[in-house]
Length: 289
Image (cartoon, rainbow, N blue to C red; front, side):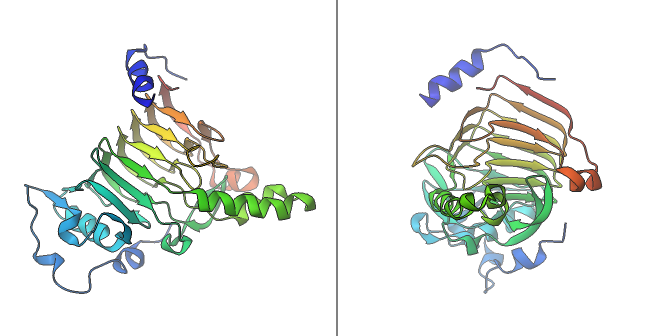
């Protein structure tokens, strides 16, 4: 069904609709030996994550190995690649000039342990605050591409359940709104203060919270993605694509099924939005279903 919907999108005519450094986070993921430093890519300027110790068995936590491959690729503006498999991971941080290529047969799957998503300054529901990092982050970086025909899977049901459990406590007290802030859940992909970023052709499944959050960023293109957040249940607050105080953004041929806003433009909430005073502008959305 997804392939048919994507084909339909390609046939449609275009209809436009008119924070601190990460050194402490990424250094904790660095290898403890000189092994990674001596590695060279199999193909020119490509960095296979298995060469850095990733298992891809769906059980081993591969965060450290994948991040090491990303850091190595950043030194040459290279491409991180995966053999077929399921790669269980916590938050990953893409660096300047890196291409992150998830091919068909590859599933990058999020950990269900919230401790695998480090807390970082960001903006959530229009208010600046500290929140768990996303599964895939472009955080104060530029010239980054996420591509391939594979799957990035948030594996988010455990986070959906935690939200509904909190709602059962809060709703009788008349503070349903507070659950959105008190139940910390990881987004799938975050672009934060990023520039010249492209996300294309990937399938994005089961985000624990918002799927693609574009915040304080510019020159961002999202092309030909499939978002499915009602697999394994109905994910609450699993927005498709949120464009938040950002500019020069193109979203096209996105096929979205979620349990909240499919496409959303915002620029802050109440007094905190006025304090930041950064509008969303120069956005084109077309050919999306």
